[in-house]
Image 1 (cartoon, one colour):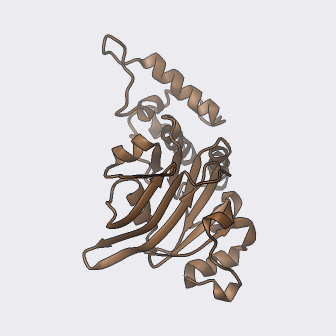
Image 2 (image 1 turned 30 degrees about the vertical axis):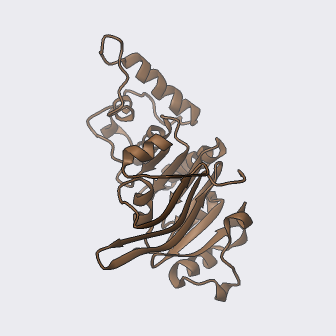
Image 3 (image 1 turned 180 degrees about the vertical axis):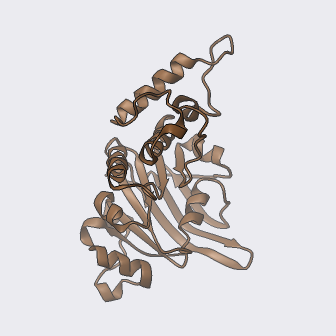
Amino acid sequence: MAESPILALRGINKSFGAVQVLHNVDFDVYSGEVMALVGDNGAGKSTLVKCVGGIYSIDSGEVQFEGSPVAIHSPRDAAAYGIEIVYQDLALCDNLDIVENMFLGRELLKRTRDLDEAAMEQRARDTLIGLSVRTVKSVRQVVSSLSGGQRQTVAIAKAVLWNNKVVLLDEPTAALGVAQTRQVLDLVRRLADSGLGVVLISHNMNDVMEVADRITTLFLGRVAAEVNRRDVTYSQVVELITAGRTGNIGLKPATAAESA
């Protein structure tokens, strides 16, 4: 793991009207790791992710990327820094093929201003090969013909196509079968092993315990604990999620330095 986080949030606060959703949240992501962000419904996970992605502005606090403070006011800003989010709904267009989806809004053009179909097809194919994705037969398959697991791998491949450095995955195995879940989890692990910082947002604790390096738990908008996955059991993580405390299970909230 790198000595300093590639993405660091410090004292993040966010309110909607009179309701404060995030309270002084600190959150670190290191290159080459899977950081799981877990919490019950309403804990603030989605809000935190949307603040990182530039969909919501933060009320106070600081976002640091590669050690420097940054201002993220839009998804375009996040993408410019190399931060990409794969949302649960995937945001893929069923009527387009894999290449068209991966380059949607970022199409490559020839000097004649025509679409460079060959270059896009090759880059899409190279990206899938680089991620060891072998479940897709052709990059010209229409997305509507893909299984849920194949769709998820395409969405993740789209997120890393542009040399992004941090990828946030929102419930990537939701509604997938056993074999498809296995494919996606293997891909999540490969992303981290290739040097990316990966944030896994999931309610599935089996998935979290299998692929995460560290776990941050949110409880009512506050960080309940940040722990190394190897130091906790399944039941301990569940207690952190449901009770928001560490005292009864003999854990102390870990600092980023302790987790490195």
